[in-house]
Length: 231
Ligand code: APR
Image (cartoon, rainbow, N blue to C red; front, side):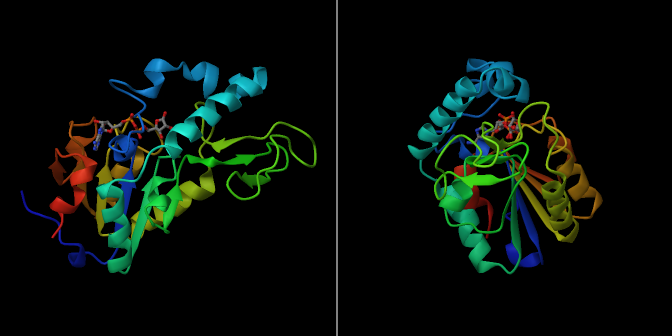
């Protein structure tokens, strides 16, 4: 299988899903050992659950943050971050909320589904960075519970963030999707958009996904082997 030469492409989008972090020890959402097999999203990952029992939902997210902190970025995350340093235009569009790309040193990261590391007030839109400014789970203006700043089930996606991703893909010549089942929309539509806008599209996933047919090249490899797929 022919390896990818980054310098052949003026701009690159790396599109990642839960499989990107699997080898760091962070469980994926679907399939064997997936988070939604162990936890019912209707109790932990939607606005209704939060409205009914904010403390339970916040405790679940606290647990997730702790388990993510116990994990480290792997060789695949490191490779993406080194690609960003060596190539003029690399954008990472991630569905992941775990912050692992940033921990590996990546800067140009578009977080489609938000971040585990932020909270927000539904009324004031104010965002708290848990690492930096977080003091309380209550909004300082209205005392409402701050909710995790992530896209839960039944939440609309952040249109501004999605638009940034579409723009990056519109400018890209290479689109590399890593570790996503392609089951969750509208994020899943970005692979189709990349093809339509003329990108050479590559998939990296040990399993074929529902979207594999859309790609010009499919590497059935784990994310940690990413560097071996590039020259
Ligand atoms: N390397 C690459 N891919 C892997 C690896 C690995 N080591 N291990 C597993 N995978 C692949 C699986 O084969 C699967 O196709 O990762 C994919 C994970 O799929 P999902 O669990 O559905 O994750 P994702 O596509 O990111 O889900 C999208 O759903 O509930 C949500 O909001 C959440 O952002 C998430 C969205």
